[in-house]
Length: 113
Image (tube, rainbow, N blue to C red; front, side, top):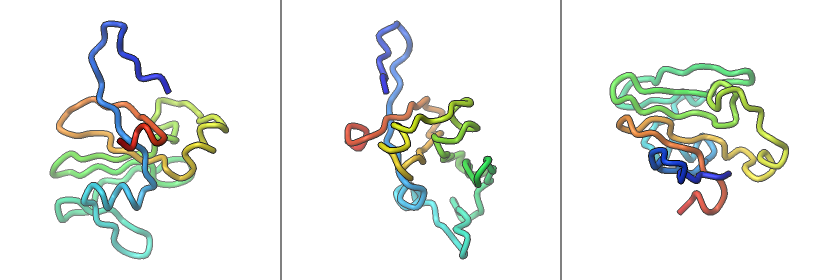
């Protein structure tokens, strides 16, 4: 994925992709119950569903949001290529909102730095 912002646009910090359980653990989101309901700031997060299942969760208190970058609801309607799916597997979740900072998705080992 090309994250070049040399066109005069604002520099956008990039992030890594994780499987949902690893991302939640990393971000301090507790998964409760057999179905792994996400909790942040002591309350259940607002969860929105996609075509196959939940693809977005947002904390009503602090605004932290996570989403499945492979979901057309999150990525603006794009369907990931077979190559992208092979490269990322189930590591498709990312933080979508942190203190009103814009982000972009960066995958692979380079994104894990």
